[in-house]
Amino acid sequence: MIPFNLLIANADEQEINIGRKLGDTISTLANMDLHTLVTTLLHDAVSIAMKIILALVIWIIGRWIIHRIVKLLDNIFERRNVDVSLRTFLRNLVRVVLTLLVILTAIQVLGVNITSIIALFASATLAIGMALSGTMQNFAGGVMILLFKPYRVGDYISAQGQAGTVTEIMLFSTKILTTDHQTIFIPNSSIATSIIDNYSTAELRRVEVKAGISYGDSVDVAREAILDICKEDTRILNEPEPVVYVSELADSSVNLIVRVWVKNADYWNVLFDLNEKIYKTLPTKGANFPFPQLDVHLKKEE
Image 1 (cartoon, rainbow, N blue to C red):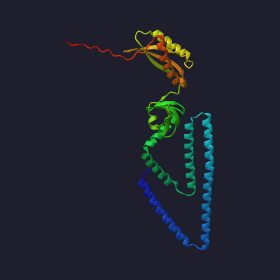
Image 2: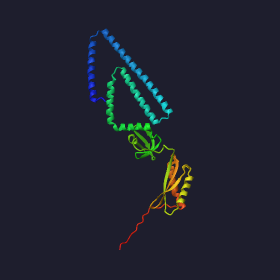
Image 3: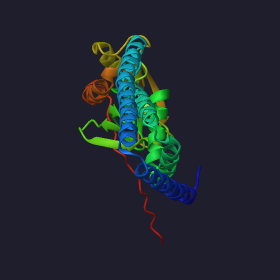
């Protein structure tokens, strides 16, 4: 990268050279006769006009070529079912890069030295990049997400302590909508390097419910009642079949664990309904839900 002070020195030197050339030109014009002066001015005017026309032609043709390239990319992305967010990012990136190339080509045709412009632009880019280092990290994270697709728009994810449906993947942040309709923006730099739970990638999802019954109650009766509840619910799949296990002999209860499989879209409704049905049904079958209890024994000292 060219140091900024060297760029300033080069610019000053170029200004001095331009001043000298301008002085020489004025001196030469002053010594010309009228006919030679008019001829020279007409020649220079025609030369400048031709350069301007050529630059305009390059700009118009360049814009047409860019439009055709972007349209071709859109067709390729559509045939290959490229993600919409990635498609938009790549389209804009290609358009910006090609437009800059066309502009630099047109400027060079006009006779302007673009080397200094490129060097100055590179130095400015470095300075801006250092000032916006956090933003650039978010940009890099957004590019990684768009390329590797750990999640897509419409997926239900959990990351950085937040859970919700992805509504938009932007270059610097990801927007998610929680179940209570809160809009949350997560910086891409943090979400790209963290653990992401994507609940939408699989077609099926397992619902797990825990229930505790009193000691002395029949486990078989409770298991049969729960399995009957599962059979009556058409959203619960038969394959894999529902299961009920004794998961723990706790201090105050015998804890049962219920595992059933449902379609991804039915997960939350089945979870809530199954909890409610178990709570209402088991007491009618003679299985009680015990309260946590603590026995305290008092010993009298003599």
